[in-house]
Length: 108
Image (cartoon, rainbow, N blue to C red):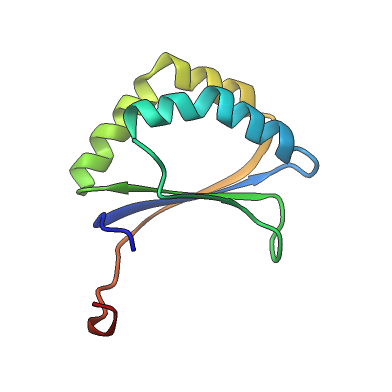
């Protein structure tokens, strides 16, 4: 189970038949920047049932302040701007949520 109190939950909708290109661009251009500033993702998935052409990824943070500092570092990185330009024609929509874990006594 995740032990980060703050999770950035992102859903990107990719243009139909653009997933392979998006994943290649993301891996080549975005992931090195994200690993440098955010660390390893908690999870990274693509949809196969329900709404299709979606990428879901989760990143953990220790606090909202930690999230804001790391996001600023990511967004200020010139290499990240290169990724944004290279993927702009592939991303139809993006949802970003900050989610918090629930601590059920029965799961402890």
